[in-house]
Length: 88
Length: 240
Image 1: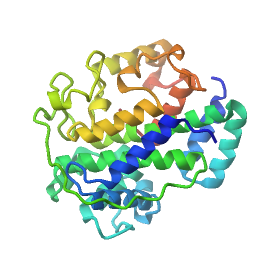
Image 2: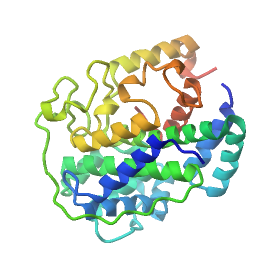
Image 3: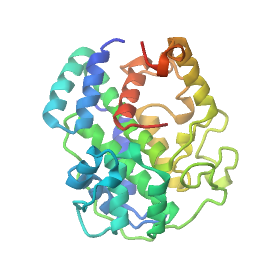
Image 4: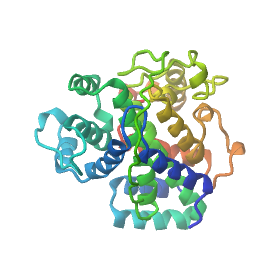
């Protein structure tokens, strides 16, 4: 995953609402992927603040189609073969 | 910082609609909800509940931003902002039993979530938060979609195959309509606002499962976008 560590650090810092930590993570991510990439990442962080709340405040059931897709990914990664479905 | 015009326009729309009367709430109530959304992040009671094994094991009072909201509205805002992953059917039922209507709850949840989008974007980029708008006069429309039914969620939603002419624009029924797209459909205006945010920040709901890197000109790739989304979901302990 290109710059995955910087992305994760940025999300973690942004959702901590700590301005100092966010500034550090933001600078590292911008250095890695540029200003446009930073803005696009911030937009997705912001959007999923809504999507997660939409799902959990309304108590949405997960669609059968989504369960099948996720199950297929889990099987591909070998989660189904491990005790408690733990990741390798 | 060169922020895409579509992002700015969608934030402008949230702020414009925030100030106006909605479907069930007045402009004054809606702006008060936005102020409460911000206050919740500083609420010591919420922080204590968030840290507890069960949010119901802690008693106390919320630190509120104003007295324009009822206690049940304050409770709803604070929990949706600070502990969304542990919202439950019994908790939503308790709000309804305390006098909040199901549609008012949906409007509140949709509005709070939209304000969180705008605030999160600004804070993440180190920008000052937008000043809250002054509420406008006007009465809520109080129109409930006739085809909304309870389908397993805590409140009613409009099924993908039961849109009426006045709600025909809500979903793209030529594709798979995910449940998350239908979440706020008891208040169609809330769904339209979420649609606008999705279109400008990410992808239309019906394209989420099928888009590829050939379909966009974002400066990050699909894997990076999905990593970002997944990390937010983990933070918010999102079951869905």
